[in-house]
View (cartoon, rainbow, N blue to C red):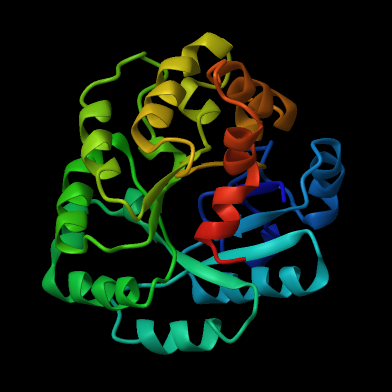
Length: 276
């Protein structure tokens, strides 16, 4: 099974997406399953994982309705607020849907990332870890230290780092990103998505070679069994087309990688992680 493990759908007039404004004309329109299906077919993808793009349970319920309507939606990663006393009730309602496969913590949007170390948050996450619930972690390279500490406190988390933790590809710096990623990769339940890279490289002027050290770094740390391909479509359109995103990753893969490793990257690991 070939899977795009990270992409988004949205309908602008819902009002959930405060970050998508007319100043982002490439994204300021509806993106729905029929828009992506030709690209999935072109790249022989069986389907994709939709990830929430707004911090509301209402948006999660909306994308679950899209999952009902499209066979290409293999799973949905929704949103939960672990700081809220209602997070467990919301989770119990969402889990009733067969395509609900986990939730994402949007650390990136927190002014103070150390809040994830508050006892109530840690205890909530421990509960989900004990049940093996898949958790996406959206963070920047400046927030990796508190995330590493969080994993020390919740070492059995079934988690995946979105977008390589957003390293500074535009500047070509590898440290301290690689140092912290090495620490994160030491936790066996943590995976990494090779996604969201083009928007970290800038909207123009990037070259495929710019991404090689970051992709190779992830592959060295996580190995072929804990990495996933994600297009981050349509956000990727700010800097590259779907075909270019695919080309960037294929260009950087080690020559030693054979059919088994590629099958894991392009679907096998996502199927296992999200319990499809």
